[in-house]
Image (cartoon, rainbow, N blue to C red; front, side, top):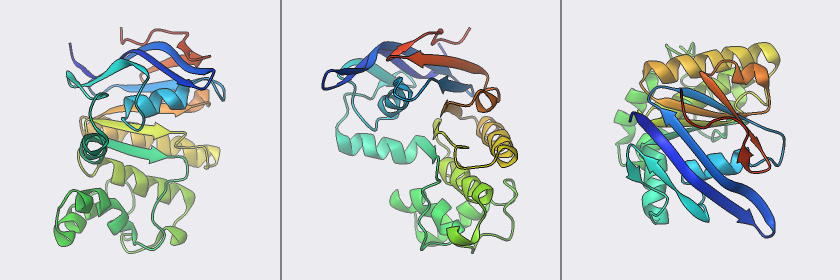
Length: 225
């Protein structure tokens, strides 16, 4: 098996609401998978369980063959810093930090000295079309530029998996398509797998495979062909 990430029989409830009703989903090495579904379908809950942000009520999550859902919060937090990367709808960059320090932040949180972390972070700006913007703060960047900084931050630790939750939701169509192209290309180029939550079929089309979630269950197969 070459699955990087696998969720098996994942279940999650919020009170009487069934958010996940026994979901199986596997992501292969360097594969880009889109999760689609209407609001409230369970797609974001699925991402959060797979990414170690929340624990499922039942089922298992495995990263590179090792179970991770039963880890304590401290170990899951470390996992999210080192083995996972995240891109959110609004970037969630720290407004008081220049772009290069926003990118370097995961490295610094992992104990890398600031000077070394920033030096590594700067290497991402050219490939993402951000050359010369290292010192700009988020408020001085366009929406598309800010999302590219967020992509660099997600990849700077060389993670095994990148999770993107509605990464183009705050962008116009043209900028959104360019952002998705970069996200898929750069993630694959660096050997990482990608899981994208979206409601937009044009965004999903950039991925290798799409799974659809409705009422906490997959309507399409969760395992690569």
